[in-house]
Length: 236
Image 1 (cartoon, helix red, strand yellow):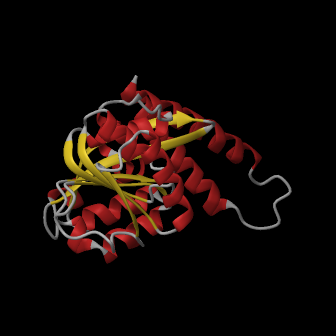
Image 2 (cartoon, rainbow, N blue to C red):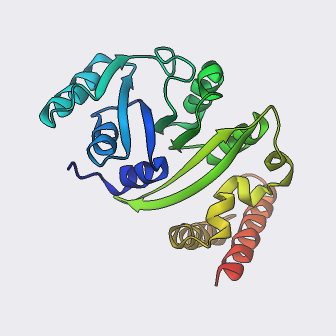
């Protein structure tokens, strides 16, 4: 069986068991090969906007003799996927803005999936706002630290134009993840400790040789530190 990195394993774990899984931006095709070989997916569709990654994915598919269970498709986002064709759709390893565009342009496909597994590389708060404002409910979350970077991933499902989540989530939940906060995730705590140290250093150095007013920046740093301290205190 193929060995996944810690990040990709966390993404795959959020898929659970499914019939057909589509992996958008598949790159080497590791996730489809893993899910099918592990018996967690019956079939898979490996998709990418570029031919090069699809060729690499096809090489891995052939290596594990899965040509009958995994097909490759050249696709910009969800464009080569029909509504209802995949029960689970994985979109991982892209910037938050690009992922929002993919979900927005392919909403007819996204709305028919039973589960979306999403791993944005940036703009996490804005991405969670997008999900809530467009009727998606977060089903599960995870976070890993790999090769000096923190990665958050989530499973979601579309439930309508607007959900209670859009009303009930707090700004810290949008920023750090409602379920990561609720379960006091150890990697989130590690991330918050690092953020606290970094922001405190910036605050300590703020104003030294400054040529402009830094009071606004100072106030924001103090608010951020107060928020982090509050979360860390609860998670003890």
